[in-house]
Image 1 (cartoon, rainbow, N blue to C red):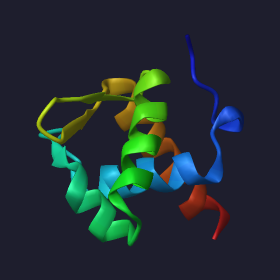
Image 2: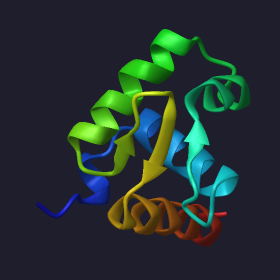
Image 3: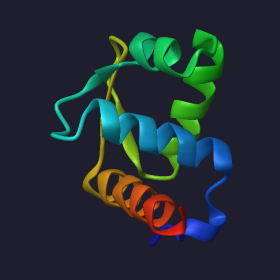
Image 4: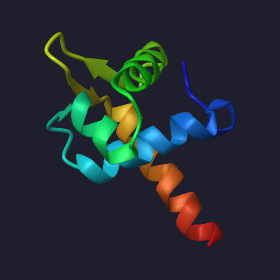
Length: 87
C-alpha cells in the first residue's frame, strides 16, 4: 500500500525526518536515541514506532533497534525535500 504524505500526521513526519537525519544509510537506530533526540519519553517513542511499523515505514527489532524500510527512507527524504522547498 502506497503511503501518501497527506495521511501522515505531523508527529509521524517529525519521527521520519529525525530518523533519516540520524540514520541516512539505514543501518539501524536505538529507539532510546530517538527518544533523546526528540526529547520524548520511551513509551511515546515505542507507541509511535509501532504505528510507523504498522504503516510499513520501519522494522522494529526485539532489542530496541529500528530500521527504516526503503519506503520509510524515501518518505522521510520526500518530507525533508518538501520542508526545504517550502522554507
